[in-house]
Length: 417
Image (cartoon, rainbow, N blue to C red; front, side, top):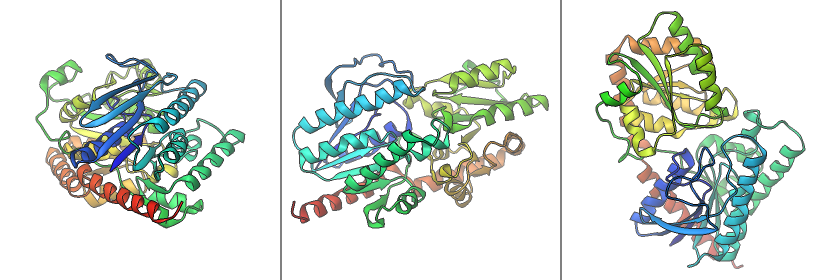
């Protein structure tokens, strides 16, 4: 089977969409499937093309057995509205044109969000190939846009809602990453039988426990006995990482200089948060900027606990963030600022401490609980790795996904067209 996967993001970009697409595609290729990923030149989050690449009209390379086709896009940093909008639209146009012309013909086309203009590109591509379209929903647009305050209710949002419903109708099948997302779409009129759930998970080969790296900790400015709480991921509007600055201030005022927060990654609000931290004299908050995904396990291994947090919004209670699984796989206790499905998962796995999203006092208190009980840290960490390997190994999830694709392909050809 030839699987054509349209994704705005792909390795060497290291955000969650790129990681998911790479993990699935790599495993399918290992199983003998022909896989093509149609993406752009790597440039996230700064809008600057990575070294060794150029923003050309069309180019190809092979990555882990995956044919990777890259099209030209209008480049923009991961912030703002107009330029990012042009970036999304340019991918839609370029991927739609190039994808329709790609050969050999695909047997199934997957178009993945979070930006659903990739889904729009998938419609003409699937029709050109005479193949079913699987719409992969990793982020409910436009709900998530209004949830973070990027746009207010109005004509633009209503237009995007129209796009959303049209895409759901145009797709032959939908795969989403959580049951909460599935229920959201059902409430909007999508037939339940049209939707499957394939959750996020962990690359167990990459995220394996290892000793901390003393040289890395020293380079980051930490003492040997510093208790490091790490957030690793996109530092965007949804992350709500003001909570980390608030907790750091509280701990500093209490004289708990043995605790530090490490924010690994980049995003739309990183520069603003870094400015705030400097203005408040929070030398117990360290920003790394973008880190290659292959190096991320070393940062997690050199941490004592991991922070997983989103702003308090009803929509976000349906998310199972990929960083949860990666942190747990590294045997780190998790400080979870989430409600809903992620909190239920934390309780079931018994792998960390939950706190109210946005509540920096609760976060500071949870940190001190772990600082005072290293044996409990080890117990929670061991529980987390055991749980995610049993339930969220990406290889297993890729096999489940492939079975869904086989079924969609068979159903598509069963109906005369």
